[in-house]
Length: 372
View: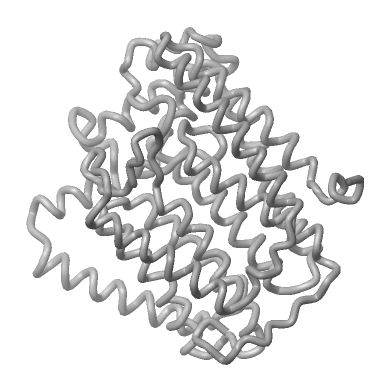
């Protein structure tokens, strides 16, 4: 048990607790309905922490097997495909599976699966990674779920998948020349579609997506109200329960997409700075743990997990302060919802399990399949 406790990174745990606290305090400060949200979120925090400790205790070396990861990857793709027939549509996006008592967003799980698959493939190809075929193979792993999520449409999660793929292949040492060629082709395809395929209303959506404050009476309303909330908090904030943008319902979805703006209004610049520092500590500790591991798979998994968290943080906070498009990306560990929180804590649990079992070097003797 002492060894188990020593293998948990308590810097990460200690950073999570105030993030949970700020989130719950904000949710509970507005109306009875919000109080019930806080109660349900507290339950999800307890469930997620329990999953974190259980997974930390397990030996997850089977996740390094090519056949296992391929089966998990195909399962994730299958779940995304099931959304076409069984998905629940919310705000124009068919991205949820509704089970009555709770809803599940498969894109959160697929992000974790993509990290595992890319970590496996790139770790096995670290010597010959600059070959063009490896860029194409990793792009295939990324593009299949990317397109399925993009077509829901869930632009935010699709962008996160791109950041995970792009960051991991850069760290692995993919040829910059091949990357440039790939992006040149992608840009050329986009320009042809812009000139000859997209209709004017589709172009308007893209323009608003790029500049969310260009239409503050329409699609840019949420971003505009969010920037007001963040700015009105000033240095020390208005105090818990006194955030007028949230209390008077000017700021929509303050418990999910705009939780950062709601916290900033109540806690001010000091609260915002604390949030950024805590996320910085979590990300740095994840990378430190990764570099302390004894093989490339574990290192690349840690890199992918740090990219996952920081891309969520940057996009969510960016849209809260009006410099990035509103995409529905959650703020890790703080936004209301159980599925994303559970996946985030499971991912941290996997990292801790890797740390606990990092002394035993694993050799994959699977047949030479596509993943290997």
